[in-house]
Length: 500
Image 1 (cartoon, one colour):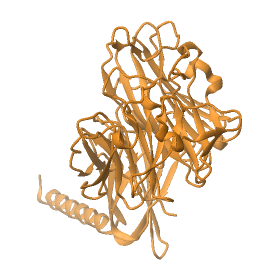
Image 2: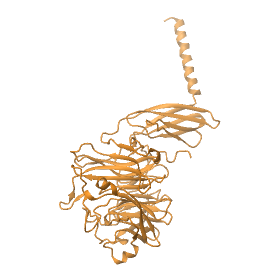
Image 3: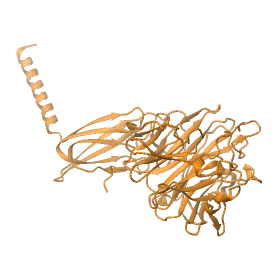
Image 4: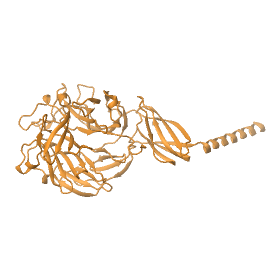
């Protein structure tokens, strides 16, 4: 190589170096993407710019349902969560930046995701009244049973087309609840863990001394009301925990509030399980909480300050005379008591209204309904606490009959647009497709059953109109493999980040 060629090559290399440095120094912003093991459909974008900018993301949808979210504040450094990616896809995400002077920059990044784990179901979606679907994503406490009955949790969130847009790759207990900060409160063992939607743990509260199960209510001051167990008993305690530290503040032993010797209905294979608390909600309007005692078919209200019983919602059989003043008296037609219920929720706007999931187990102490003749439903009651009366003002599910009979689990929620989200989470049938109960008491065992689920959004009309239906089924009719949904909630993914 002669001298002139070497000089030419050196000049070209210097020119390319200067061009590279020019591009680096003059480009408006840089982007780096980080992925997370436990939340494969999420990512973190770190954006650095020379000028202070505000960020907007546009996550391209596959059904003309782009997700656009703008983040508050101007800065030269941003950590931006990218959520709602599609599985097994090359996701296109447009990042837009705008300066305070109005200059605009944008860049498109592509994020490739893998397939869902093999035991996720094919979720069937029916968008019956698309214009009436409440906003947000449906968070599902989904789980899979294999043919031998082994269970695996599949916590996830789906869009209104039934497409999984978020999932968490780790086992969790009963609790999966979104906080006002847009984080999730989940259960790991006997501890509550707060994590963000990228699966990063923010804090772990100390384990509860007597265990944690089923549900937690978040109070307005940030404290937590958690279902636990009274000392030397079984799933019949409530504790209040400090919201930041998890410190025990006070507790309620329901053996001191209700009658432990009242016969349970529905019964349980565990003899000590006389009450089986399975749901709690807090009402700041009068500083009270309501709990569901499945095995007593009773929802009760308790004053948080005094611990006094305020009322009992449930059938009037077998209560000692001392409890009669607390029994709500039914008024109006139609009216039917709930049995084996779950998930009570106080109405956010109308004091005295309570929505709950009525599983309907047996519906009698003395003349139980056969599962093939039974039904489950969501039901709303209106309670006049001064008169101690109760009216049934709305329900959905009775007309489905045994097709959605769920002798265990289930959920019902008020949605922000007035609709209700109902989780028929544990539909149990034999391999011939007939509804069955949970327990074989003669053999002290669970019945063989194929479990499936439906999550249905309906309007508050009487009768309610079906808006959106998700179905979770195992396709093999010869196998006992199946799916359940412990609870279903409608949440926004970008709860605390979205600009108002």
